[in-house]
Length: 277
Image 1 (cartoon, helix red, strand yellow):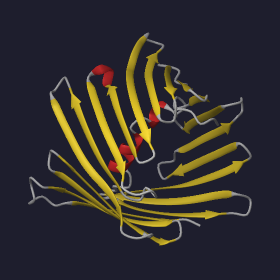
Image 2 (cartoon, helix red, strand yellow):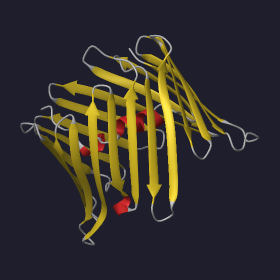
Image 3 (cartoon, helix red, strand yellow):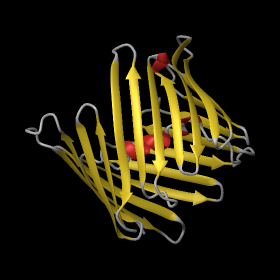
C-alpha cells in the first residue's frame, strides 16, 4: 500500500482512541493461542451487569489473505475475509453474519500517493445501501468526504466532511457530520518522541439542540509496562484508566468513571485481562 493521506475514517481517530479506547465498563477476559500453522484462536468472556456472554474467534493469515471467523454464545457466526492487493493498491473486505443473511457487506479500498477511495455495499435484499468516501492530500494534510446512499428510497442517509493536519508530535482535525448538524474539533499533542505520553482536547457542538461538549484527557507512561489515562468533560464525567503489561503482549486494564456532579452515585468500574502469546 502507498503512503498517502489515509482513509476518511482515520480523520480524528487518534483523538477518539485516546479518549475512548480501553475505557472498559464491564468485566472482560480473553486468552489467545497460536498454532504452528499460523492460526490464532482467541476465547473471550464478558460479564456486563448480570449478563454473561462469550465467543471464540479464529484468525488465519495466508500470504495476502486474512480470514477471521467468530462464534458467540448467541449462536451467531461472523466471518470476515480480507484480501490485500487482489487488485494492485487495493484492499477488499467481505463480511457476513449468520443466521442474519442480510448482514453481508463488501468493501473495496483503493490507495494512491495523494488519494484514497472506499466503496462499501451492504448486501441487504430489502434496503441495499452504498457508502462512499474519498480523501485527498498527503500524510501531513488531508481533506475527505463520506456519503451514504440508500438505493431503495434514493435518499442520502449521511454525508460528512473532514480535514486533518498531522505532524510528528501533533495531530488536529475538524469533522462536520450528521448531515451538517454537528461539528467536532480535536487536537492531540505527544509529549515525548516515543508517543507514550500525550494530551488531547476535543470540542463538539450539535446545532439542532445547541449542545456543546468539551473533553480533555491525557496519557502518561509511568514506566515501560504501566500507563495511566484520564479524561474529563464539561458535564462532570471523569474517567480514569490504569493499564499494565503483566507479561509481554498481555495487558491488564482497570477503568472507572465518576460523575463529579453527583458523587453520591456509585462509580462505574471495569476490568479487562487480555493474555496473548
